[in-house]
Length: 171
Ligand code: FES
Image (tube, rainbow, N blue to C red; front, side, top):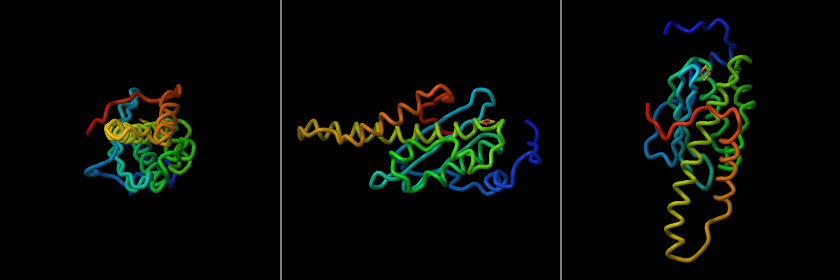
């Protein structure tokens, strides 16, 4: 693969590409999500830490073009500090705008949001598993908020343009 032609990209996009926010690994993540675009082969892995049902830390690792890296960077800025329910509904239009994506690479924002949704789903699945074991012992019910967030994520992941899903892949 040759060098990407950067002349077609916006100042906003190039800033995210050259100085990606929240790039790199994250140890002991509470949730890990991946998404891939089969067309271009780009792969994105997102890791989150969660405190008080908010995203307290987020990191990404991306093997992809400048637009995919910029979208991942912009997504992490937008998602950091959000409640899980708000992050599960983060629209790709907000990410695409923040990353300065060109119209023909808008799908990179979808890739970023899909990986985020998968990371949230992974966290919620872990929590449900942990709480189910605890509730089986104590006889109490699962918190409805967790179930709400699960259904929000599933709605996002089942949308028609959802990019190919990979289970918790590592780069
Ligand atoms: Fe590969 Fe956008 S060009 S995800």
